[in-house]
Image 1 (tube, helix red, strand yellow):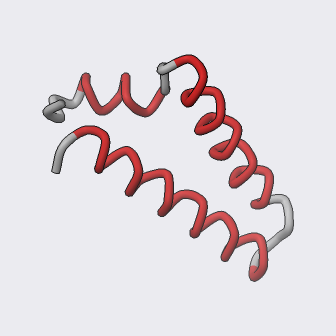
Image 2 (tube, helix red, strand yellow; image 1 turned 30 degrees about the vertical axis):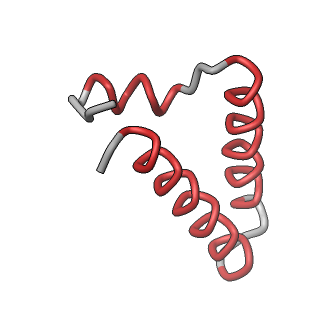
Length: 62
């Protein structure tokens, strides 16, 4: 899997897990989903994403 596909997969899993945990465990998990959403929005404008930096360091192909 290439970098951008893996990034979208990770973001989707993070949001889905956070929403489920927010519904089942505690509503504060929704803040994590909001954090992921804010990072996605800022990366759309800046082209920089913290997860991409991490994935590149782990050797994921562009």
